[in-house]
Length: 490
Image (cartoon, rainbow, N blue to C red; front, side, top):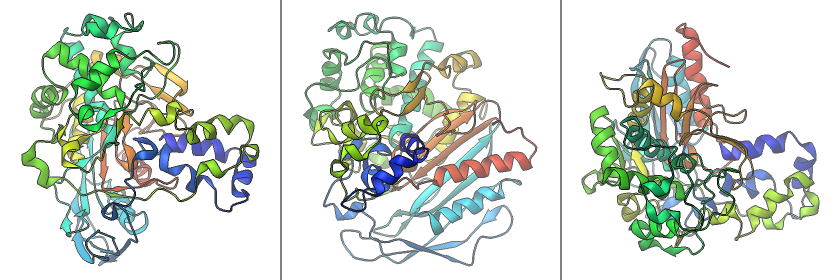
């Protein structure tokens, strides 16, 4: 979403397009210079250079027999040429399977096209409408190195899509009368009052308005994964802007800020509270802090290499003035844009077992597509007799709290209390929808007006401007609503 916000601004300015394309060293277009950050939930440090097992050297999917007619699909796809770190090529045939309700056949076709044309390696998409599952598709490979196929219970790390699950924990506590989102955070977390933060309400933590997207001193990775050192660092941190006067994406710190409040109020870690109070009662296959017993179900991510070109090589005098601040921030290691994702040394390797087992409630949720979609289904209505938040609590949770230029990302963003809201560049499921994307392609959202709950999870973490896999699926869902007579907004 954030990358597309930048891309939309640029494509409306032909001078910027010409100046970047005409850069003296050749290929410094946006696709090369900026893709490694703006679609990257964890900043420019996300891809581990030199890790052969995390890059795509060439992908070609060949449909064998095409897609079956009717609601059941049983086509085959072939994957060739994945650099696995252990062998140069893998040639594995994996089935794409699942069901779609009548009227949603287009979603099945688009899902298949994403493998054939858009680089999906392993993925799943699930859609509920008014609590009834209407799309449940999965396919490709859960592990391109071994040929392990993607199955109904394959788990995928969904990066920032996790924030919706964490926010839901806070809203459930508010619904029960245990947490007042408009009360000072320090009421629940006294140490947080340091450095002039005594009056910051909990809601500002949820809506990225607290001015705490960074810590002054990045810590050893082991300390970050241990929880308490990060919570203490944020309690002692001075805000980088006056809280409440602006908003900026707290890409990583969101998890500890909101999560520590949940821990103080409930007496349980975020992952434990989420499991016991939301995931188990609502039947969600979704974890914040992966149990060791579930490790074997997790996909092996394939992460695109960052571009070779560096934004620093683009002369600022070739960039229209209104965009120079973003280019400068992108190339400055001390900018909020970069510091917000550099909280530890070394950075988090989200493929590592220890990173998946830890609780990072902003970024390391692991779930199935059904688990992600079912979360939103339980937010906007009942699913199998369970509703996670009542209508009044949901209305408060998804009311707009911040909109405009993001102080961290320097592009337009729009937030409710823990959820992203649609913008022109990133419409989610329509004007009434709310949700959260995850780095590299995953997406979850709910739409109370249409009754749609959507979850899409992917193992191929793309970092380019042309990644429209989720958007194509969302449009296919909207087309299905048209065919089934459901109202489609926008």
